[in-house]
Image 1 (tube, one colour):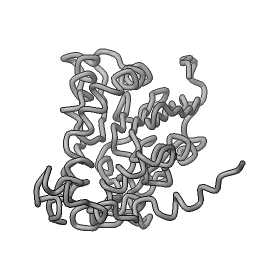
Image 2 (cartoon, rainbow, N blue to C red):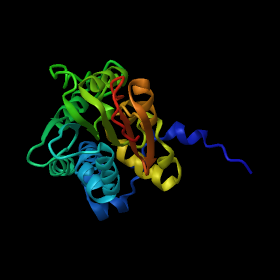
Image 3 (cartoon, rainbow, N blue to C red):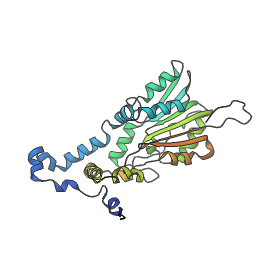
Image 4 (cartoon, helix red, strand yellow):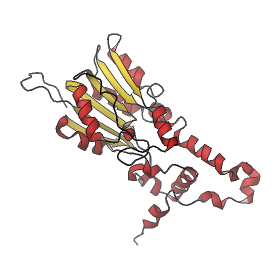
Length: 264
């Protein structure tokens, strides 16, 4: 027997399970459950409150270790991190430890800018919410960095082809860029984790229903999409996915005639 799942995508994030509250629910948990503003406040708390440091330090620390290894950091390196919650997720501390006191870690922290864009309804040139043109390296000289890490920030870039060209410009030949991103289910068409079970969809609908933000309007780039955006600007480009976490990495080509050999 075949099952038609089309109706699932039609109702996902649109149906209102809160309208099915029973009097017994109110008696047990309080009249506050009927307050739309309170439900929105908690929905936003569930969506963004403390999630990133929890995911990265407790659930995906193994992926962080992979990202650090891929950066191929050495003492004295100068590294750029563009990310969200760079401190609380441990990205900065780990990179600083790897490059040592002689190294330099430049950070572009996006969390406040990203949250403001969501709450204020700002859209990028790609038509997606909370995405914008990245100008963080526009004043940076060519070949400044020994490594670049995009840590949970890829969704906020509204043109990855443009950004990839800029990142390669400021990266030294033979050096790596790595992006690691835990994508939001429901954003960018990533809905398999929601569709897998009606309980999961019910919880999802309870979460996103009170929000004024449509998760489908948030940017979400898979590692493969970022890999495609870099194209032949990097060598040894790879992409992987693990439990919704997407990792891309690639190395800037060496100058013609260089005899220094590096692995992918």
